[in-house]
Image (cartoon, rainbow, N blue to C red; front, side):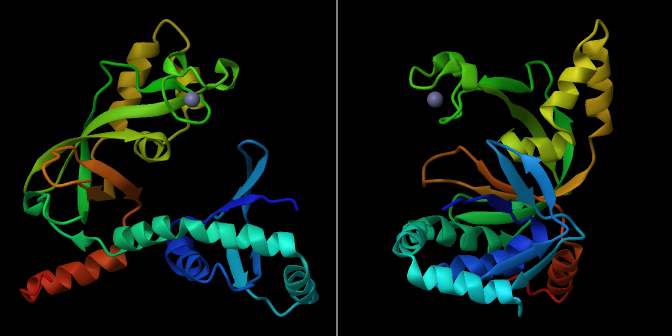
Length: 253
Ligand SMILES: [Zn+2]
């Protein structure tokens, strides 16, 4: 069996993605068109704004795939193994259902919170990326298990975020940091690979400030002050609209 990764972003993750997660043991067939083809350990696919996703589309291939699923024991085993991901599913549910608050309402008493914040500063006094080992995302030179020749650069940035009520410093890694920075590390490397590199980087980062994002914040355990950024999302303004409407009615629950 060959597999390929398809990453669902934003609305596709909320809608079809959540549905498919909850029905992993059902033999749904997913059809997709207008997806972005990228490479990450081989070819992989991502949704973009124009992507169309069809669950169990009414075409012959759907019947073929249903038949293959029903007859192939290995496929069934593989898919039931995927169900072990159920833990991360319930975590995803918590992320999606995170209560929308203002920053000054943040407390460790609840698990996940959703805030709407601006990026106030990006710390560039230290490198904004590091060489990461392939499997554990440790510093490549600190990992004794991974082959250093498979290491790759990974974002790690310290930023300050804020809303009208408070500010907060958080550390972001990988794809979430990339959303804030606005380009892949390779572009930053190309930009800074000259004698004016530091200057260009400062200029570029200053243009990335004051952008607005939705952050999902999480305190892993009581008594631990470390705030984890569980997710960074593009703002869904229709959600914000309903939040504001509730706020105005004085029913912030
Ligand atoms: Zn490693």
